[in-house]
Length: 344
Image (cartoon, rainbow, N blue to C red; front, top):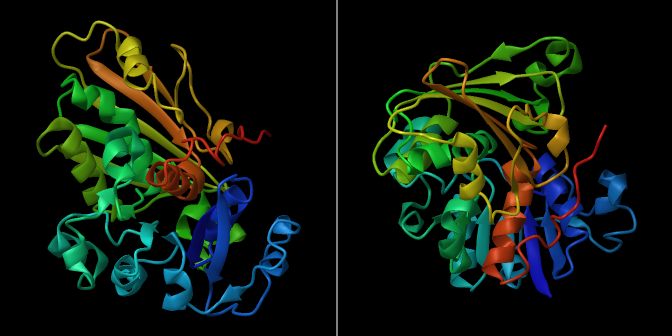
């Protein structure tokens, strides 16, 4: 069995890790940390997990106990993994970080967007960006994996085939994205209250969002040089889900966009290219580690429109983290992640 620990177990991504790992045939959760809930049984805080983790209790972070694990997930706010990741790596423990701490390769750029100095710049060179659809082989051998953000996952998967084939103008890309309120985390915030978020929709971060440099970095890797991207996120009155509507201007001879997407993702277990004319819904991926994509070309236009939907807590976070774990430990890629979405 693969022994794993989870740092930051009381947030939405932490409990989602527990939910998914409960059905993983090759994993044993040995430790889960929370300073605020230390000593509390996991099933007391999350009754949906009763019967799955009978003896597991939240504890304070202990490098010795975490270092005895084969892998440790960090489901923490930015800046936390900086302090512990190096220690765990020295102990031989592999680190899978769900925060933004190791996603950007440039420490100065990270500091500019996150308002503090990077706490572990020496680790950035070996951190592997954990998008399996682009980095599968590097992930297999990685000691430190940076799990992509939710918006970056939906946007990158939607644009990859077009950029890799140089089928669109990479200088003028638009990503119009919507997220459910769990994307803001479990902490108490006025903007996430039911009375504030329900029956309303608003954009935020239009002049610059922290996920923008991550998306640009990933798309630039796919294209081979820097891309131009306008990214506008929106908060919508739903619990889970990301819906990304992506726009680009076609260039060159693009005979069959549908075939381009189908061929690119033919061997990807967690990307579903839907039939022509489809409009994927966020509810079709709720609770599942799946990205559903549809590609459209409006009549008499050189514009391409890509629709990309994921569950922000699964394919956009915890499910993708487990996919990385499966690759790192040579498990079946779909282990613990093969359940269909929940509808309604």
